Image 1 (cartoon, rainbow, N blue to C red):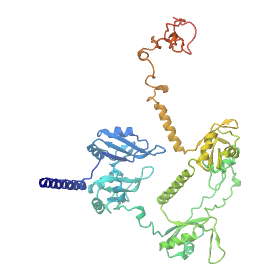
Image 2: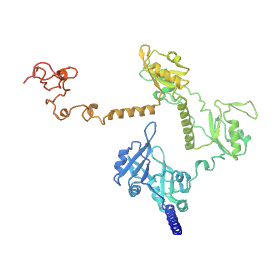
Image 3: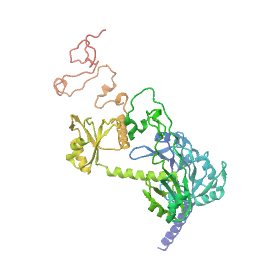
Image 4: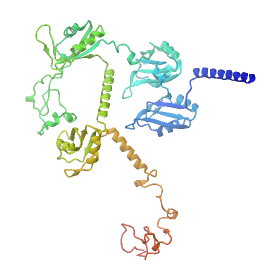
Amino acid sequence: LEAKYYLTRNRLQELTIHLAIDDMLSATVPFHSASLYVGDLAADASEGLLFEIFNTVGPVASIRVCRDAVTRRSLGYAYVNFHNVSDAERALDTMNYTLIKSKPCRIMWSQRDPTLRKSGVGNVFVKNLDSSIDHKALFDTFSLFGNILSCKVATDETGRSQGYGYVHYESEEAATDAISKINSMTICDKEVYVGHFVRRTERSGQSDWTNLYVKNFPADWDEASLRKAFEPYGAITSCKVQPLKMSPAPRAISQPQNDRPVDATKHTSPENTDETEPSMAGESPGTDASDAEPAEPAASDSSAFGWVNFEHHDSAVAAIEALNGLNELTQQSGPPLRLKVPLFVGRAQKKVERERELKAKFDAAKIERIKKYQGVNLFVKNLDDALDDEQLRENFAEYGVITSARIMREPATGTSRGFGFVCFSSPEEAAKAVTEMNNKLILGKPIFVALAQRKEVRRAQLEAQHAQRRTGPYGALGPGGVPNHAPQGLHPAHLSAPYGAAMPIMYAPGAPAGHPMGIPPQGHPGVPIPSVPPNARGYVMARGSPRGPIPD
């Protein structure tokens, strides 16, 4: 027992030493799988294209392009899995920032655990970059200080640099070294700023802002008038009024030579603004030179905008709560000043920040609208042109409470487009209406009723259906939708015999007249049948063949 005790203790010590060595190695050399993340891909980059590109480095196990769950469109990134880690390392070293569909791809190790990526450790922010610096130039500049996990220059929709980028190092020490060496350095005749990345919610000015944007106040106000209106709410450090850009004076235009009537709806309907003929400010199409008069100033021409910067954040908040949305402004002397448009007072934001905020707001409203009408909105088509909204509502009213019913019409003429929508208050009522009203005759026409779908969802479903039709149940189809392989159930003699040759016809033994149902045997076009009296040549004529004797 004592010998066994000492052996067990020695074994435990050896295991402890091996585990300590493994921990030290894992701390210094991070483990990488053979999976790579490939980003910044073109929208039409497919798995087949990526396989051809990355298979030249080493054998690829699998490739997956990530797509939207609804529209099935590419999200711009993919995962490439190699069989060997060495092949993945070679692909990362040699193919990073190579052009794929005229766009430089960005390759990094695939990390299933997002802790390092979201922690911000080792992430560096670089700004004031020259427009000529791309992803690879930024990578080459910062790769001298340590191993880089990801490097990217921010670009707009057209691919042009926005002047800033991000470099994510594997360690915090490498990031600190890069900041100390490159910050305030001149690169391409520009002094760049390099610092630690700070999240948007943690940046200064996000919670203690003091600058306000003001618009729709009278155009004759100067900085003193604007300051006087905002001084009751706190100390003001600066105030600025933006001078107005007045519209050009209207020019006289001559009457067109061809005197043709002008469609009023074409120029007044908001849905047809793209079709409106171009005209100068203050002009109306089809006016004569003698009728040209100075345009009356619009509401936007009689108001101005500017900025007010308070000393304290609380003063700015109080000014917004008191003045935003007012239609009248009190004056020290005289009656209150009435505004044509309600006064707007809000936090001053950059254009990018404002666009980001509006996009998030609209996306949230869109998602809420989709959830609200999910399963209750019906699409109805093949409607008669004489059917109106009230008749459509009456036909569907017996199946539940209808919140809205509308037939879509042409904006210019008002004629029906043959389809519309009916919205019920509950999914059960909508499902019952679909079951009962589909293919029902209304004004002599069978209507089609189904749950309304968004355009991208319907397009994805149609693409999947077309792909299935092209493939077919037995694999890829040949020309004309015919399967490439032979149909099932034929005797092997039919498959091997050439076209036009006599082929045996198999029947069950003992059947009357050689057929289980007593039906005389039928032949193929151009195939002689011994049991049938021969016609002109003893062949069965194919459908559509010319009748009469066949010439020799």
